[in-house]
Length: 113
Length: 110
Image (cartoon, rainbow over all chains, first blue to last red; front, side, top):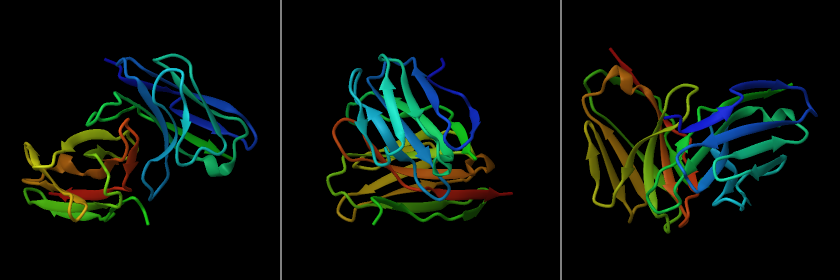
């Protein structure tokens, strides 16, 4: 039972490089999310997708783009990486009904030099 | 002001003791509440949902006080394996978007 799978687990980039973080879930959830977590701060929502075909900005969307490829997959792209984007990135999914929790992938640790 | 605030700790707890801590939230329209657990450098995992009447799950008890806008978590008979960061999570809209606290660190010592 895989749940939410993120790739890669670790990545080091140079400033200005681009990359895409992949996320897939096998729980048939409608909603998917991308968060970043920085030391001393709670998880902050970057983008979310309430259902297949829709995406919306979260709290910290600048510098990122997303694609909801299908119901299973939700990718996060950094077009021109900056050191401020050094963080741990988590993907999550859930049913969007009340009281349903989110299930998280095990994260991508991204360093921008 | 942060939407969800937690005492960062650490709360240093002897094995077998009880520890309790709170979380406050600012949005009075918040609909659902959760406690997640996060181990060092791992993903957050749901510990328990928090219901209006309060609820228990084994050694863990969660309470909600809507009037004062806080939730609490109590851990009884602490185990070494309870050492973790506990994240307070509040659902603020109808479809699923969550607000996370920065977490309370609990360290259980032998």
